[in-house]
Image (tube, rainbow, N blue to C red; front, side, top):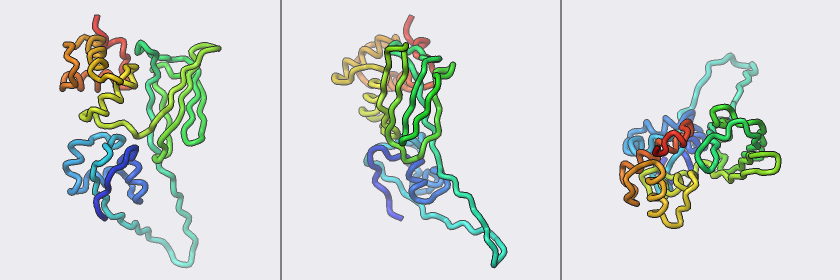
Length: 215
């Protein structure tokens, strides 16, 4: 099978399922994808324009008696959607009522103690909506673009992460300066390795952002 040109929103997880493979690891472990394996370690993050070699599907054989019915159960693959729910200051919104809609399936509940909502979703789901009630009369609503995050080594990846953290990226340099000021880095306005390392840590869903701000 020829190389596939990645489109925005595609992931290794979804490409594996679409091509009848059991796991995305079958793709990254192909010798033709050796470089991709180094640069795209997260199966949920690709960049539009990446070239991915899709190995041929290997047919599976099951020994069975002839002249008899043999039922096989096929489970539709799922991917995990993991959301860190925080306020504008980076503090967890644990305990708040929420409603999550993905692929026309609605889930409701209260944000868990750790502030992390986890849900299995179809691998081809690409959008959704999260609504959180701050109180009886006030809600926050987020539109979700699943699988659309660019790698952190791309400018668009830096912009997306800053935007998700509440920084207006109309002027990227100003946004970087604001982020650097907030977390106590040297204020340079450039997306250097120090900024990216801190941003990756700050963006970790399990991390309470308020603990990373400068004191």
